[in-house]
Length: 360
Ligand SMILES: C[S@@+](CC[C@H](N)C(=O)[O-])C[C@H]1O[C@@H](n2cnc3c(N)ncnc32)[C@H](O)[C@@H]1O
View (cartoon, rainbow, N blue to C red):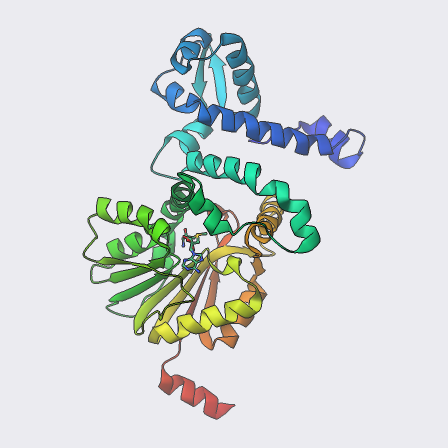
């Protein structure tokens, strides 16, 4: 958690500009490093078994007490652990986001962030100056042992958190049978849709290495007969036709507007008349507060640096869908989705679209 200024400190930092406000960003970087150190030492997992004194914890983590004491105090200041009667334990915030394996996998997110901070962010000045990247993001994640899996696990945690709500909001045509998940990586969305729709069969299109994670999840959920994994570059293969639902989840942010029109046209061609497209991604929106808007700007910068992508506004997505001839566009978001939005749109049946063309 970022360190929280009290009311007097807020006044000094944010209103009077009397204290060096950028120090809070420098502190944020230190806070991240303290958190990453705790994750790499398995400190939260160990405290989850039972609260421990510093010397008990030092023994279990094979650490020196003096260093561990500094780390615990820093983590206490950030709200990750707390001390009671000489024993440290995880706060409820840490229990929820780091040790409950059923929701967001922030341990995998830390593995990814560590790698990105070490290998990709240092190139930021040259990328911004030249517009060129000395790496390809997905080749890079594939080349680092365990990184592609950590990336997919991070995304899969996000999916498991949001999918139940998304599945309820996507109104499928009656008796849906075919789903295409483009860049579906870890498979969690296809799994949730199949579990909610017993007659649905899904195809996940993604790279071979991403699908290794999907294979584990699909097998663990006993869905190998209903979920087909298709390793391919989505630009190099035909997607097939007559799908009831096409998912483009966390995908449009990889491309510019022009490429996204082509992507949506491919989705349109893959759907049956009356079929649904669903997009789930971070989108700029006037509904969000300052923390989410600040987060979205940082993530958009990251997408630019890593893959020449960016976050779009709801208006831009509406225009993209219009260009690709989708109709009945709906936008949904909730504060729980931390800046992500769901967009659904329908491929008109040819009778409807002929009628609307006649009117024009
Ligand atoms: C940010 S992840 C999103 C994963 C998942 N859809 C989700 O929302 O959690 C993007 C996925 O797209 C895949 N991807 C990117 N470009 C691709 C391409 N040209 N062909 C196939 N898959 C691609 C990546 O491997 C990755 O699994």
